[in-house]
Image (cartoon, rainbow, N blue to C red; front, top):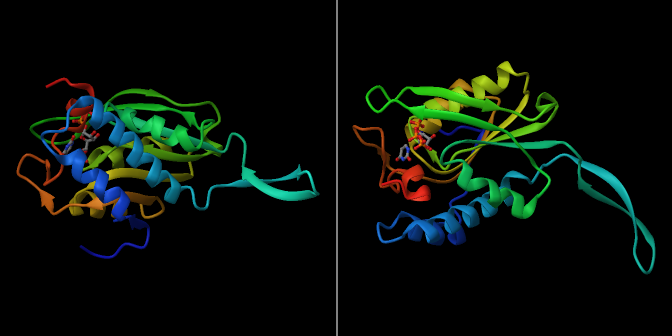
Length: 212
Ligand code: PRP
Ligand code: URA
């Protein structure tokens, strides 16, 4: 795969350990959900490295000092339904006041094209850093469409956070939206003929919500 300067693949031993368990066919809904949350928290730590901050003064028992805290009303996460929902708590664990918008998107099983069916975004999102959450970046079609939609709503500072990506998805998204920083925990080998990531983990939505 080409090197894209807006793409970070974390490939971290602590995350890879959890992803190994996540991938297994023997991992069932409860553990799967908890792992998606925990991995998201670890990816959040990296993706928030340059989060917008504000200066505050804090009085310690010894002195008053200047400190930095995350700016208020500055960050929104936007899970892509359904599977992105599984990542929201993982961000809130580290940053509980992140606003949450929702975009409903499903992939046509034949064409693999994304279809939007729901959109509810926080007021003022156009002035916030907006982070799209979706554990799977496969063809990249859903992520690219979600980001198109956010740009139409005026968002200017957009990021993508995923757990498992296919090289095809990274390439498509990084090319379509070179201004968007993409954070993925790992990049797998390829997509199969049905648009599934290999080795991947199967259908993230079904595994999170026990629908199959
Ligand atoms: C999955 C996944 C992504 C999308 C990724 O959702 O959660 O949204 O596929 O594929 P892409 O990169 O090729 O667009 P799906 O469409 O299966 O909907 P679901 O979450 O409701 O199951
Ligand atoms: N969506 C998933 O849930 N899994 C894949 O491998 C590809 C798209």
